[in-house]
Length: 476
Image (cartoon, rainbow, N blue to C red; front, side, top):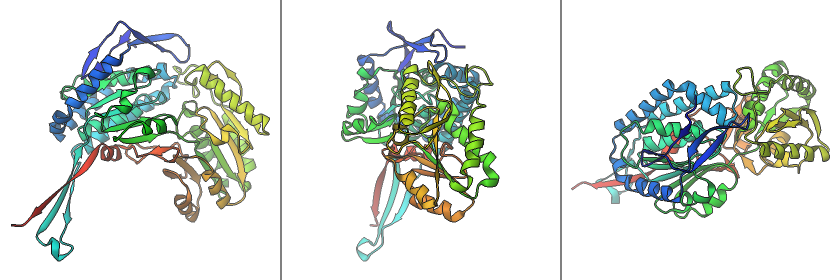
């Protein structure tokens, strides 16, 4: 179902070069296809084209932007199976999960199509004192101009969608660098955008290697940089100059299970297993730390271990597979080392811990030391830890004892506890009666502390990609 090779896109047009980048099947390790590899000259052409397209994109009417986005929704639906298979191969994502990500891709573009025609301003009452009598204020949102995007490997469709779809809706030309490890989804999106009547230069999709990507950060012709990835994002922000910067940099998400959950434990366990081990834990909001009240700790631990041991790992192309490979063997070996470090510090491995190549077993540990990497850093793999607490305030303090703050979850029937968690947790989002891994694509999504700045979610991204322009009229 994959093509033999894929072009990249500069100023809406496909390009093939003599130099190719191998895209590996992450389960077999074999070359699945190849993509054309752009160079520094291609990037410069893309930036110049995006800058030149600033005015044409601004003049591209909201209903025209909506039509482009609706075309994408339709074509993604027609190519659903192809997109899911490409994602399964290039990311090692189990095919059922890959199909789910295609659905989210479609939903994100559909939301953007709706938002494209309701980017509104407001009327401001300026007559708040005698000196402003006869003055009237009005605002509207105007597109920033050319923007640059850098996306990671773990959601090659939906994380691209959360940048590209709002940019089109807002009227911003863009240059996108998808991860060179998982470029296919972005390039198929480029194929479909090339079918539309977007103004020349409105988009470029370049699976660059890191050596040539720096202008996406430093070039002053870009008015915004949107980066999703690791903590290197803070270094990018420091070098970005005067442009706006939005960053989504991950976390080490915690989930609290309150004392009143005894009758709900089976349901809680199902959600914890999903949150911790879905797509091999390679999600910024994967459940990493599970905090359980002493009253229900022993029962939940027993049920959780039993359920984790049932998870089927293997070939992601099989519909019965729940756990596929990590993105590469180096990532799996890193996390295996973190598990060993935690054990040496006194943690107990309740299940899992083994590795074969890029396949790391679903692993659950107990009592991970406070200073262990598994407690302090982002695991980004199929490993979670469980620990008990005695008071709810203690649990809140433990969640906050982290450099990260993307999303947290809490299972509770106590509304006071839910509200206190919302007040006290230093997180971008608090999910009540579900895992922090929950996300709907129209909600504001982003973090506090080291997890980043800014928010995704289509309407919120449009806000970042536009600015308020004021007009004041005086009666004469």
